[in-house]
Image (cartoon, rainbow, N blue to C red; front, side, top):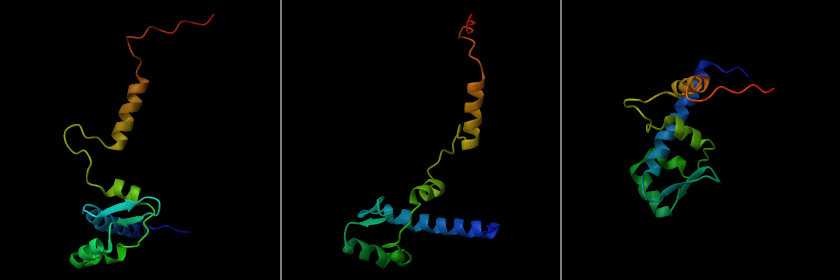
Length: 114
């Protein structure tokens, strides 16, 4: 199978749409996520009908299975550090590597095993 830039872009747009709609639904009272079945958990039909009456684009999500919601919500969530001291994962990994490779001057040298 050949995967093109267009395939990846299309998939990202789909995930972005899922995140936008589902996260708005989950922010409302009466909704949760069913991790076992990978879909919305809805308290009652009345809650669903009231929500869809004001949010027509959400109608198809009542029984929609989204197997990778955890990954989608992690990637598309806007709740990331962005102030002073915020680092990307690559920057944090580099810092961790540098800390591990530096010898601590406070520790005594290893004794030779004779």
